[in-house]
Image 1 (cartoon, one colour):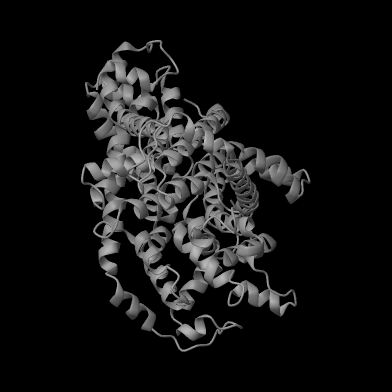
Image 2 (image 1 turned 180 degrees about the vertical axis):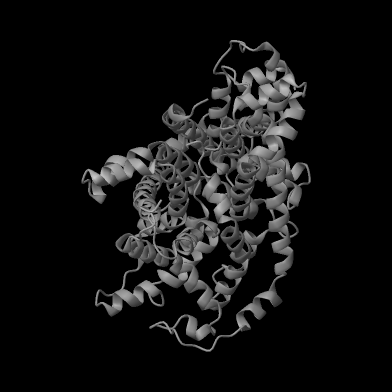
Length: 273
Length: 306
């Protein structure tokens, strides 16, 4: 450990430079959201300006931000909870009782993720219309759940796979049923893995733009639609657009920052032995 | 859900599992997700195939009936199809190379000790949390705009003049945006993989006089091999369907310079309301995705210990 404790100045400097460059676009957008419209498009860019909240006021007056944000949270969390509830038993069974077809099933599930959404947009749209589900949160929850189910099953599978089999045998000998073993013994052990799967899933749902733009209009519209409604070409309102963008990404970015340690620890996809 | 349905879901093997007891008790656990996914992937697929043989335009209700292979005929005669395929491949390929190469180097840098490492890591991965529509807007308006953009200001100050990114380098611009978004994802997974590298291996190499470059190429990169194939597969899945970035920045243009297959289908379906034609293109996309998926899954599946 004492070998590792020494600092690497060159590596550190390079890493910091790249990190700042990567973050710069976000920083620049947040900065622009506090500038008056004229200064936001000024070149050379003005670093010293009198910050204003006027852009945020305009945006909040023009659109019901809270309603969009609520939809985003409700849909992301709902879809994630549903996907995990469905995937945990499947991943458990696949990891502990693999049969010859487990591998095929798992790979087939992943391959469905490669089907282009647009390829099935028309039928999905028409089904949703017939079922009167267009522009409902239910529809998006179901769509997102199905969309991410393969990844959720895969991630959970890799976590269950790392659990020692002896635990299962011990509990089985003690007379616990399949479900009891899963719920009371294994679930607590893979909880960190479930958490990180859920985090990734929430981020993917929050940022999904294709289905949300095509299947919602107003009532169920999440924040991706909120942004789309401001990005129509109507002159240069960059400061206001930046304010709207900041509002749309702030919840998920802050959420990501706080949960990154958890997220990092779980994003192995079975690639780490 | 009957047993027959599940058998369809698992075409890879017809033999029964060795452990009969387990088979009976775990089936109800697997069926809900596999069954739902099966329905979700097969029913719309069947509908898309069906529509692709119809004359079906939402704008013209008078035109109808069976079209035979006409939709496919027009599609295959249209050079736009081949061009969009090329764009899809270029987009996925370029972003994969850029993100994985830079993520590997950065993962190597970030597993060394330096002050403020966790803060730098947070900054580094932030783009992954930004929704594609927003990141496209940031790059289009604030950074790459030819008159008021930040990059235009830099190039002008340096005397290089102004680059109109989305007019002159449309595909490259989309690649840059997509790489900015997906590099953090590759970085996270590769970093996690690298952290499991035995420290003694690295120290031993260090003592043997291996420089940082040979440690990177001969120890760290091989160690990340499985993780790299996982990243390749995950990114391919998402990059094939890339849509919002193109929709916001170039709308597939100028001309068809950034029209990938996803965007081409979108144009047919939602701009021309040609359901038949769009469905035919959708079928092509699905077939291609399946070919690609088979190849990918072979590569990644090798490392997947099931």
